[in-house]
Length: 429
Image (cartoon, rainbow, N blue to C red):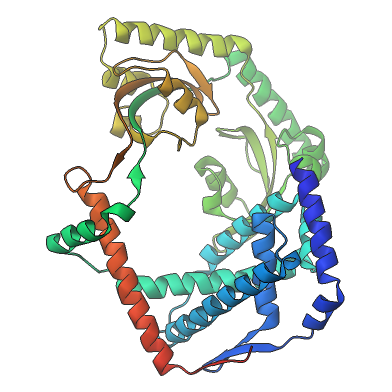
């Protein structure tokens, strides 16, 4: 259903930008001049296209909405130009690696929205490298502006009186806090038994031997790799930062020279062999072949039985939750938090299974084992607080941050008005 809707959206957008009215707009024109910087119709059109795909709504079919949105976006673009001019004066630049990472995330999000890279290229009317180039400019400007604002306004503080005055004036506008629950958990991952471990290791070792004795790595990846993407990319992971990979993979890959193939590398995903294609600074371009470690049904039963046993010991008072978590949980943070997850707003759980389990508990109770993508868990409910309004007594830090944000916004808007007086703005249309 969703894919059908997205296909329809792409068709209607294509018809819109192929219409006589749009064809006239393709003759680019200047909408505004800010200082020595110009804002073009094509710049605005790009933002309107992005707005449409992000919201799955064709703004070009609604003239009134198009006019309103164009006016709003033009004002934001003028504000951006003002800030970029000021940032250039202050010699503020964006981190290229951070820009690359954000562009890749945005492109991945857009591809997911429209269904494929091909659809995205049709939608923009340009190849993927050019789409990335346009997005890169936007992202770079965004990061520069964030750095500028941080440099000028990050140190703003508020007094106790200012917080109290802010609360008295805006308490009715502050958000309410939904029902919250305070939880601890014990996580046990489902790990394959020794026979499965040895079978997977033997398989990847044989593939590595074939690759080392002249076998084509791309063909081997497509034939044997259990990475779902291998059928389309033959194991080629493209350019990425070392930090984008899990530690074991990154360390093994970074030690390779172009053309070399790694020893067998074990990560949380299974066993890999890695071939280095090329590297430049902190960026690496590698291929890999993955053989997953597949737990069996008996491995899952073993974990569930162990968690059920721990639950009975805790309910019977024979053990303490924190100590039991420290000794048994596979959560990597357990050494510092002793299994305490803290407060969560009901309805905002990132893992729905936790919310389902928590809803069934009374204070002090411990759930039956339940499964998530991370493994099996038991959770303990420490407290449950009904929805409520923020108060100075219970939520001072939250309200203080709201007051800081409000004061920062006021100072920023005042500074922006000063920039408008200093830098000439000429709106053409």
